[in-house]
Length: 54
Image (cartoon, rainbow, N blue to C red; front, side, top):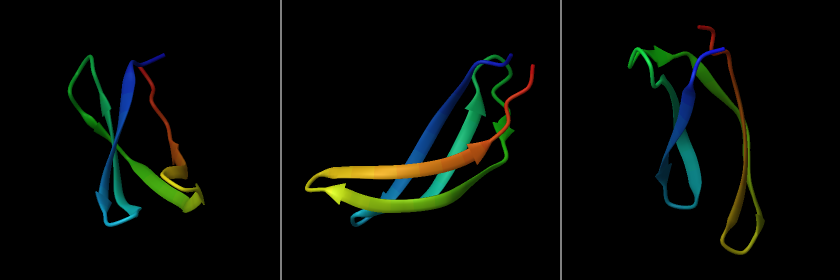
């Protein structure tokens, strides 16, 4: 399995862009934000789907 990390760019309160990168190759992995909501003050719940194969 690959070694991936998720980066989220925020605009205001909610994330607008999610990027997943494979740390071994540096390649960007396709990712999509399924949902993002504020669950409590200062806390976000972000659901992202992606696959990281390696």
